[in-house]
Amino acid sequence: MSSEFNFSEFLIKAHKANASDLHFREGKAPSLRIDGRILRTAMPPLNEQDIQNILEIIAKKDVLEKIKISNNIDFTYEMHDFSRYRVNFCKDLGLPKLTLRVIPYNIPTIAELKLPEYLEELTKFNNGIILVTGPTGSGKSTTLASLIDLINKRQQKHIITIEDPVEFLYTDKKSLITQRGLGVDIDTFASGVKYALRQDPDVILVGEIRDKETLEAAVEASETGHLVLSTMHTNSCVQTLNRILGFFEDKSSSLVVQRVVNTLRAVVSQKLLPKTDGGLAVAVEIMTATPAISDYLIKGKFEDVYVLMQRSKTSSLVTMNSSIYKLFKHGVISNETALEYSDNKVELEQMLRGIFHGAKNMTDNDLI
Image 1 (cartoon, rainbow, N blue to C red):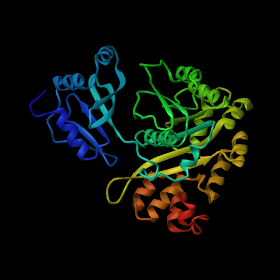
Image 2: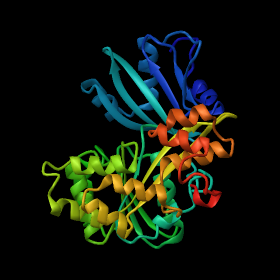
Image 3: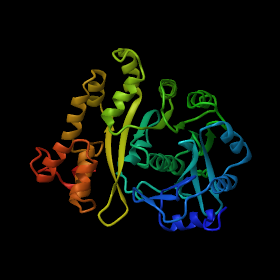
Image 4: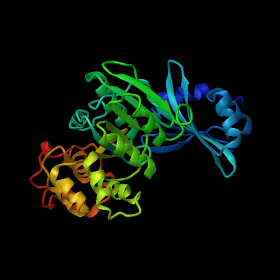
C-alpha cells in the first residue's frame, strides 16, 4: 500500500470523526459520510495496489474468489475489539470501489436512538408483519436490531434472522437467536423464510423484502403464527402499501389485498435529518393497522388512510410531517431542513405558519 495511506489508521480516524460510511475507489481519494454529508479527504488518490491491499485485509479467501467473477458483492469485515462493517464491492466505470457501512458492536435501545417509545409496543405482537422503511442510510437496520434486541431481553422466544450480509451480532439473553447469511447459510430470502419455518421460530427477521417471492413467504410465515420483521426501500407508509401491491400483477385481487392487510401489523417509515448543532435527528412516520386503517386498505382508499393519520392524536398513527414539525418546534432542525426533507411541503408550510387545520391544537403529546 502506498506510504501515504494506512488503511487501519484511516478506519480509526474515521471512527473518531463519527463517520457512518467510508468510500474507497481506485483513482480517487477516500471519502467519508459524516452527519449525512459526503466529505472528500485531501489524501492522494488510491491506486490499484491500494485497493488490492485493502481487499486482502478485509475479505476472506472465498470472498476474494467471488470478487474475481462478480461486479457486485456484499460481505462483512470486523476489526476486532474496534468495529464491524458491512462492505459492498462494485465496479465504477470498470474500476473497483469499496463502500463500508459502520455497524456498532453495541445495539442501541429505542431510547438511545431517540425513536418513539410506542415502537416498543410493536414487539408485543405474536404474529403478523412489521415493516421498517426509508431510503438508504436512514437507519432501518439499526431500528430493526433495536426491536429484535428488546424481544431478546424481555421474551423467551426463538428468533431467526435472515440477512444479506449478517450485520449486528446478537448474544442470547432470554431468547435463543439463530443468524443466517445470504450466500453463506441460505440461497435467497424467500428460501430462508421457508426453511426457517422448520426450525421452530417465533420471530423471523428478513433483511429486506425485495420481491414477490419474499413477500409471499413473509405473509405465509405470519399467517402460521410467526412475527416477521423486515425492511423496504420506500419513503412513506402509503408508498409502502403501493409497493407491496405492485408485486402482484392483479392489484385488484381481493384475496391478495385481504391476505396482506390481515397480516400487516404496522409500517414504520423513517428519515435522518441534519441537526442545527451537528449530528442527525430521526423523523418517524407510524401507521399501525387499526380496524379503520385496515378497512380503508382493503378498499384501496390510501388517501383516506393518510387523512386518518393526519387527524390522529395517538402515538400509533403519525405522519412524517408531524414528526418533522416536532423536530423544528424544539429547535432540533432548521426551517429549511424541515421543508427539504418533507414529501408534502405545502402541508408542512401550513404547519410551520400555524395555519394547518390540525397544527394549532397540537401538543408535544400529539406529536411523535
